[in-house]
Each structure stands twice: as C-alpha cells, then as structure tokens.
Length: 210
Image 1 (tube, rainbow, N blue to C red):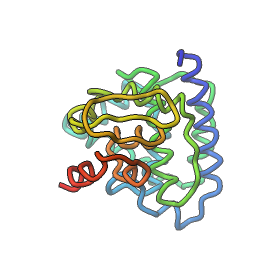
Image 2: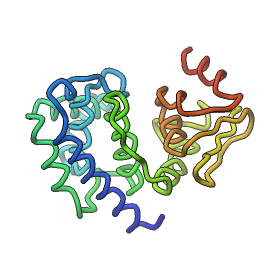
Image 3: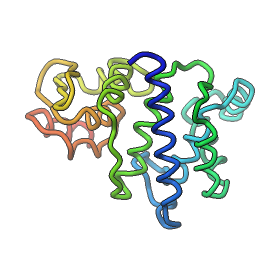
Image 4: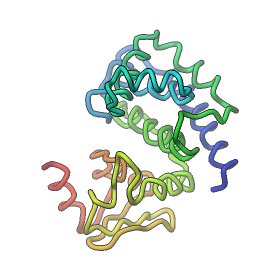
C-alpha cells in the first residue's frame, strides 16, 4: 500500500468505528476489551488520542516518569472519563487529517485502528471485517521487531501463513489463518488462536499461557 492508500484506509476504519460507537449500549462500553485491564471505553478513548501533539506527549511521558506503556494507559484512562457519546464525533473529526503522534509513521495509526477495532468488536460479538491488504501491510510493519510486540522473538519456530493473502513470515511449525487473525497474533492477542489452524497452534497455546 502506498501512503495515500494507508491514510484512506485509516479514514474508512475511523468512520466505521464511529458508527459502531454510535450503536453501543451502556453495558457494552463497560465490557472488558481484548486489551488486558482495558474496558471498551478505554480503548475507544485511546483511539481518540491519535492526534496527540508533541507538548501533551512530553507532559504525559513526564507524568508517567518516562514509562511509555504507563503513559499510554494513563492518558487513555484520563480520556475515558469523557462521556461515551463524545468518542464517535471525535473520531469523525479526524477523518481527512494526516496528523499523528510524535515519532511514528502512518503505519502505527493503521495498526492501532485495525487491531483496536477488533479489541472492541470481538468481546462484544460484533462482526468487524478487516481489509486483507491493509492487514497484510500492518503485519509487515509489526514483523519482525516493532516495539512493543517483537513478534519474531515471541513466535520463534513458527511459520505464519495467511490463507486469504500472500503474506507469510517465519520458519518452523505451520500456523495459518486469515491475515486478520495473523495480525492479531503478531500483536499479542490470544483470541487469535481460535481463528488459526496448523501443528504450531497447540505449541503457541502453551507458550502464550506460560
């Protein structure tokens, strides 16, 4: 995908997520997401922070004493204090903009919107298709060593093969499935294991449970 295609996909995903947010019931906002210790509303709040500028980012990092993961969580939780009906309009306001957080490429917001969309949809039993070409581009960005996933190290000894795209990576025991499930696996989502097949899956289940 070229840069324009990446941003067009981000815009499409933000629009469709905003539509999903409009449809969520009160109890769904409080439901656990696929992100450990994050509710659906926390993930939604995090997605509205994708345009955070340098000043707020530095302030957040200082407040988190230099811990990036803590900064990401703390800023999301603060944003999650807003009324839930504010998140859909905030996402729609981002459409058409190419603003992004400091220090990232356009691929990071693509990964965020694709993966976090599933973090919300899957535990709510909502169907949310992931465009295969975009998922493959995101997977290539994550593989092999993108922080914080470091997928190649975690998935050492596995050959990952997408069944709906030409994407493949790694060597070893076969693990195959839709590229959307492969992307979720690369980004550490255990829920992906139910969508994958092959002799490597039992070993992955044991490894991820450890």
